[in-house]
Structure formats: C-alpha cells, structure tokens
Amino acid sequence: MTYYDFDSFRHDAKVLAQKVKSEFDPDAILGIARGGLTLAHFLANALDIRDCFSLNSIHYEKSKKLDTINIYNIPDLSKFKKVLITDDIIDSGESMVAIKKKISNMYPNLEIAVATIFYKPKALMLPNFTIKEADDWIEFFWDLSLE
Image (tube, rainbow, N blue to C red):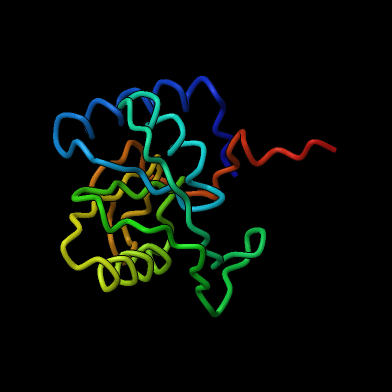
C-alpha cells in the first residue's frame, strides 16, 4: 500500500490544472464521489470554474471490487460544451467507461475529458490528464478515518 499525502497532492494537482487549462479548458467539472471530489474542488478553484458538480458511482466496497457499477445523482449538464470528469484513480477503468457512456448517452453533444491523479496502465481506458502510474493500492490522505 502506498500513502499519498497532501503535499504531493497539492503539487500534482497544480501540474494537472496547468495541463487541463492549456489542452482542454472545460466549462464545468464533474467529480466522482467520493474519490474525485477533492480533485474536483481543487481544479475548480485553480481554473476559476464555478460550475463544479458531483455524481455517485459505486464499484468498490473498501478495497473489494463489486460485481456491479451503480451510477446515480447525475447533474444537468445540458448547458455545457466541455466537462472534465475527475476521480482519484482509474484502476480497472470499468467505472469510468460506464460513467462516460452514460453521460455521453444523456448529453451526446458534450465534449468529455477525464482527469485523475493515478492510473493503472492495464485499465480499460486511460485518463486524458493524469500524473502518476499506480502499481499498488493507494491510501489517499482524504481517506483517513477521523476515529
């Protein structure tokens, strides 16, 4: 297991924000709850984007992958042209493939890009914007228990 701390995140998110701004420049950000919310919030501030939304996707229970992908609480994205979807990691890629498919079916004219901190190279899809390759389970600083 690899621990990912706040200072590393702050540095990596700044680099990611610069890449996104120069290559995509989204109208809105859509964070995948829960893992993508911290990145969505940071990028929304860094890119001065007020339209920051979230949706829920459940494909893991703790570190165990489930047989289903539940996607719900999808916001109305009809007034946007370019949306950046954020998550902490693309592991298998199954969740993000399902999310992109569902969003694209609902909003066929929407240009979608994906940003994550980590990715696994054998995933079904790779993010458009990313920082680090993962070869281990990542424990993010925002996942720490308050107990």
